[in-house]
Length: 187
Length: 187
DNA sequence: AAATTTATGTCAGTCATGTTGACATATCTG
DNA sequence: CAGATATGTCAACATGACTGACATAAATTT
Image 1 (tube, each protein chain N blue to C red):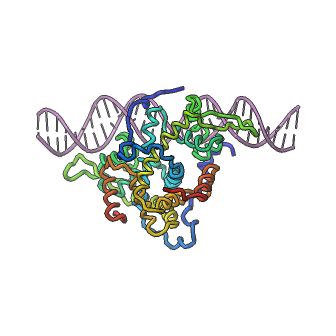
Image 2: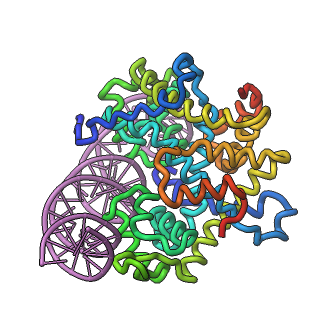
Image 3: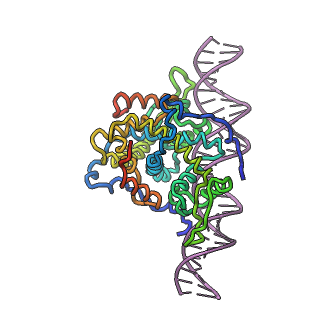
């Protein structure tokens, strides 16, 4: 199962009908144009926050994603990262090498399996991640401020439910479990 | 090796602190890692729905965005589309030409200003847009089903509040107004 | 010990989509 | 008419995906 690039395979979709039996009879629900387009604009501005800072570092979104997940999940293996980002070794290698060379990330051989390169963010890397997350958090807080009690939690439940469950990589599993467990510390 | 391309230039940004004077005193709000990562995964899977279908058509996400907004806002000018998508004429030109050549979109000269090329989706284009929107709508409905009364509306308010207000292009303005007014169907 | 598998790195080439800058053309406006 | 505007197009390039092949080291199996 080496290369094969899991991405092009499987994921036969069919995500809709599998959800529940009650849905099969109503296939012609009107498109939610509002949510579709709000998601487009919201996500565009959301990642735009980070883009401006990244430019000053000579980095792109790819670098952000890598250093973010490494920072958040210390000791992540390269293979894990490939699962999370759903890109190829080659694509990851380029940005990872830059982040290593410039001291945002360090590698450490695994203790039980010394072929593994466990990844850790340096202080420099963590500072960048925190800075970018701060910008995005500001935006999130601004958006959550307009919501009533309990509604912020509903937003979290909505987003979790938007995520595919059928291909849970290690990190995603951690996130969903944590969310399912806690899911109440919302402002 | 640092390629240090042009990206290492300016762009001051500072979008966070400009929000309000009350914000200046609380800079250290903890990052909302949960929402940040949920947005990443949710958006990834959300656009993934369309990606699979688009592959079969030989199209990419760029084509989807173009034909989507043309279909949704008939008579859109090229300049409007550039504003919405925030890409250059050149980038838009490539995908737009393909969509025109393959009959998903047609052009019509503006009546008051015949330099303008007003864009319209053909039946073929609309069918594609509806098909893709259907997949995404299925996902959205699945996610909204888990919410209580009024919470779906809260999700919409959250997403609207996540969008920058300070650069309202024509389409975005329409969307925000429509959402503020009726929050329902826009066609 | 040797053979195989696994985890990772790397090379060469391609593609999609973004960029800049310059220039052409048609059309509107003063 | 002169200039501004809306659009199209050309050349050149950057980023970040991709494929497929191959290299190396370490673990595992035989």
